[in-house]
Length: 153
Image (cartoon, rainbow, N blue to C red; front, side, top):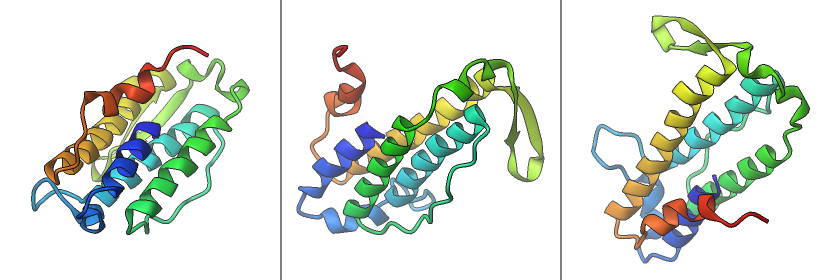
């Protein structure tokens, strides 16, 4: 989420930034605003799946880059506030993954994180990044990997 906030901040400096939240890679794809909201919702739902504690529902109503940045920052704060105790030992606990109209699937917490949460999160992060690149925002690999590649404190 920090990466997403950082690339959105860089995008906000661009001349055409007001059009970015509605931008799509292709006409049948969902816009940047959805990509950010879905990444946030994926991170939030992982908290519930890992801890068993429901998180507050947020409206997916952000329409500006500033609102999307605030959503990312709010998600980071939420993630930082998670108590690690309820997570311990939950890697083998069963999690029910909704497959929409197809039904559900039972996975362990570890399987769910590796097979769904992480790929889904990175799909939406990468799609948001690609939309911004398509719109001419000067982003590079360092903007994507930077927050992940910080030295140990």
